[in-house]
Amino acid sequence: MFDRIDGFIEAAEKWIASICLVLTTILAVLQILNRYIVHLEIMGIGDLYVYLYVICLYASFAYATKIDIHTSVDVFQSFLKKKSPRGEHVHGIVIRFLSLAIAIGFLFPAYHFFLGAVEYQEWSTLVPWFNISWLVYAMFLSLCLSVWHMARNLFKAAFGAKRPS
Image (cartoon, rainbow, N blue to C red; front, top):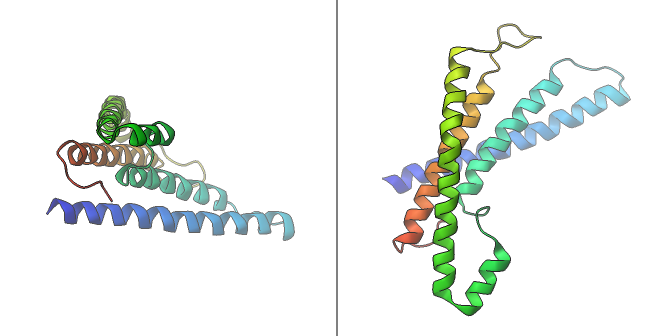
């Protein structure tokens, strides 16, 4: 059951990051064409592509944690692999544990920041009904997903499951 939920979360993170990156690129090109070729700036496109990029950034952060690509130092790990496979395994567990501890350490201040954003919502200047506190909500969700992925990768590494895909 957890593998299916984890697979769904992984797919959602990958697709959200990919779609937002494509949309961000299209909107940035459109803004450049409008501003420098047509000499007409459309208000809001710049804000929209920044918001999409932030979503892309948060989703890709969680996805990178899931596939375990940003928490190790490849040169040192390659050296350990040549010298001792057991040393490489222990190094991987220690690095995953330290990464998880750091992420959990960031989770507590982020939680208080999230509660502040829920209680004191910020509204957009150009579009008064648009709540821009969603940026904080997305950051907190991304951090929670990253902690989940780190804990799961640590569990798999420590208890002999195959390397996370």
